[in-house]
Length: 152
Image (cartoon, rainbow, N blue to C red; front, top):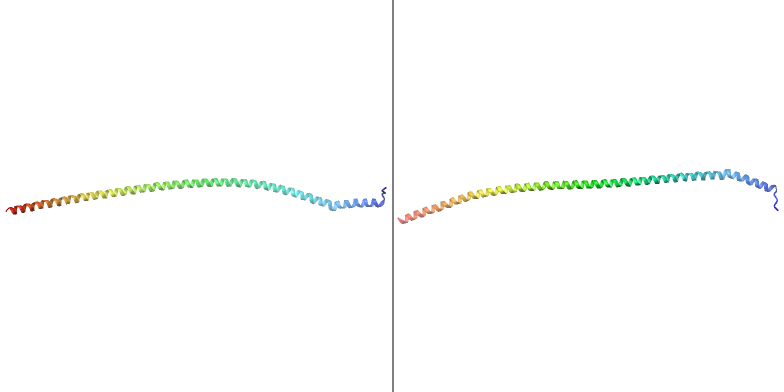
């Protein structure tokens, strides 16, 4: 049978003293450090979750702003393109009108030149008719004079 003597009691009391001493000097500080570490990890995880959530909102906001900027850019490109087409059409119309005006002016000048040329030709024709008539009449008078000289 097992007998309990004073030594076993002393070992048991020493063991209990050692356990209380270890608890006070070693286990409690380690438990406090572990609790603080877990609390910090929990806080850090909460901060990470909050940062991730904030990042998601920022990303969504960024994407929305990017879509809006692209939409505005497309609208501006379309507007600039339409303005450029309108300006080009306006310039084309102005150029066509200028060409028509120049063509009309050139046709009018050509018509005036043609009329002047016809007038000058008409004058030259009248002068040639007069010269031809003079030649004919002078040759008839010369012929008549010769016939009258020959008949005498």
